[in-house]
Amino acid sequence: MIGLEYPAIFMISLIVILGGGWFSYQLLRGERQVEARIRALHERPQTGFGAEPRVTETENLRKAVVSMLSSIGQWVLRRRMLSQRTLADLERSLMAAGIRGNAALRLFIGGKIVLLLLMPAILWVVAEEAHLSHLMHFALPGGGAVLGLMAPDFVLNRIRGRHSKLLSRELPDALDMMVICAQAGLGLGPTVLRVAEELAGTHRAVAVEFSQTADELQIMTDPQAALTNLGQRSGIDGVRRLATTLLQSAQYGTPLSDAIRSLSAELRTELVTRFEAKAARLPVLLTLPMVLFILPSLFLIVGGPAIIEVLRALKH
Image (cartoon, rainbow, N blue to C red; front, side, top):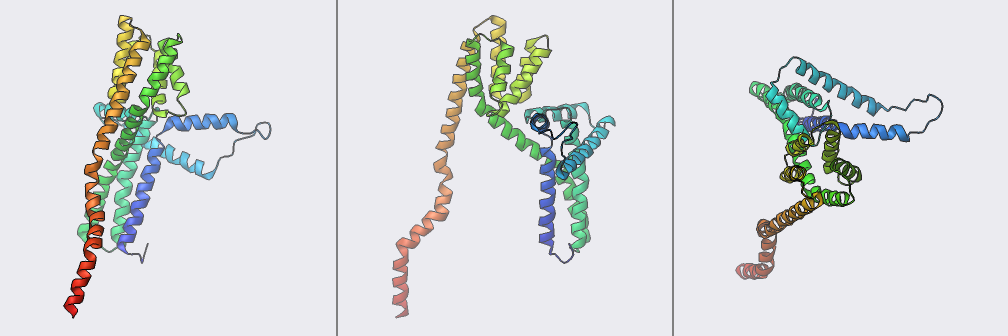
């Protein structure tokens, strides 16, 4: 790093930090990793009796990073450094982002601790190599600590927002398939499970939610608790309305297919309304680019020849 300019050092360090943070939080997707490993276990070729799967260096490095972050998070949880309310909020945020698994909370906390310690150290090295003032020696690591503490929450909120949008967009298709399953004579549990299996490849967000609900319906003795968890876990208004509709259908004995069909029609109408509202905003959003890029060119074309003639007349 010696001999580099300070902006270059800062940009390289920032890219390394952001890349490491993004890599760490991609590891939180526990279900996807488990499914990939199970699929690879069934599909890998057997070269001989007792053949071991080939493990690459990247896989070993990823396992080492996951193990380190999980150990740090587990150490923090055992020392009870965080309150029960904070842990409950983190668990709800992770579930609302579509991140499942027992290790998700440990990895998230471990990632926050690592970034909290790593970013100030990197920025302190940057300040040393750039020969900055003493004030910057304290300001940069302090800002790095704040950034390292808040960056995981920012990434989690982005993942949560993306998961919520996917869930809202995919829910009407899932409801249409639930109507088909209900008309075929399937009960609530088999219907939810069948929809989760059929949509696992194309509608992953809603498939994850329905799969967990199907597991809870099989495990819990009270189906109302599983449906209540479905409405509270996602934080989406459409999913809460679906849970309420299913609860009312089970309580009052109304036909399941009719209730789901009407809810699907309402959600599709609301989705189209949101698209129309976004389309109506386009003229307003296009005003600034038109002023900046189109009108100057128009003025140049219209007034350019006149300006040239005036300049020629002034020269003579």
